[in-house]
Image 1 (cartoon, rainbow, N blue to C red):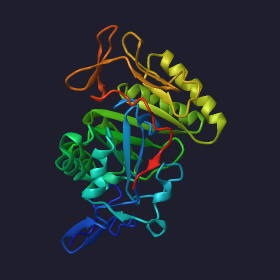
Image 2 (cartoon, rainbow, N blue to C red):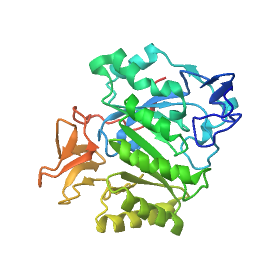
Image 3 (cartoon, rainbow, N blue to C red):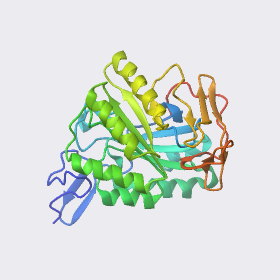
Length: 321
C-alpha cells in the first residue's frame, strides 16, 4: 500500500492537488496526457533570454498544482473544478513540427510531478525526428522532488524555468525550494529564474543574493504591484549590472536599455533585443554555446538555436490548441 505521495516535498497521504492518485501498490497520474492548452509565443515573452533568443516557444500548460499561490503565473490553474482539460495525443504534438517550434516549454504548477510529462521529450523526438524542437524546458517553483528533477534532466529537458516567489509569498517547505534551486543550477544547461518582485527591501535582497549565488543563470525580475515596483526593479537591475552581474533583466522593460545579453568578460552585446527584433552577435559552437565575437569568451549556459531569429516576430501569445 502506497501511503504517501513521493512526487513533491509535501508528501501528502491524500493528495489535495488532484494531480496524483494513491492506491494499493500504486501511485499514478490522475489525468495522464491531459493539458489545458498549447500556445505559441516569442522566447522573450516567456521570458527566456538564455535559450534560443528570438526563437518560437510552444507553451504546453498542464492543470493543477500542489499548492495555492497568489502571484505565480499558474495561479488560475490550481482548482481542478474550474478547468477544462483535453486529451493530448500525437496529432496535437505533431503541430510542433509543422509550426517550426524551437523550444517546447511544459508550463503549469509543478508539471514535473506528473509521470507523463517526463515522457514528452522522447515521444516528441520519436514522432517528429529532425522537425522536433531543439530544446525542452519545464517550469518549477521548487516543490518537485529532487529525484524527479534529476529524472527530468535524464529524460531530455535542457532548461528549467524556476519561479522564485519567496520575496512575496511563503511557499511550503522553503528549505526544499532552495535545495531544488541549487540542484537545478548544477543539472540543467540553462536556468532561467523568474523572481516575483514587489519593490520591497526583502525583494531587493533576494534578487541580489540570487545574482551572487547563480552568476550563470538568467534572473528576470517580474514586477508585481504596479509601476512603483517596475521603477525600483529598473534601478536594481541597473545597479547589479554595474557590479558585473550582467545576467539580470527586468520583464516588461520598454526602454530596451537593460534587455541585451552582454559578454561577461568584455561587456559587448552577445544578443541585442530591440522593439524591431532580436539580433544575435555571438557565434554558435557545436555544443550550441554562445561565443563572443569580440573577445572569444565562451558562454556555456547561453544556448543558441541553429536557425536565425524569425524576421516576423510573434507580437502576442497565440493559442493553437
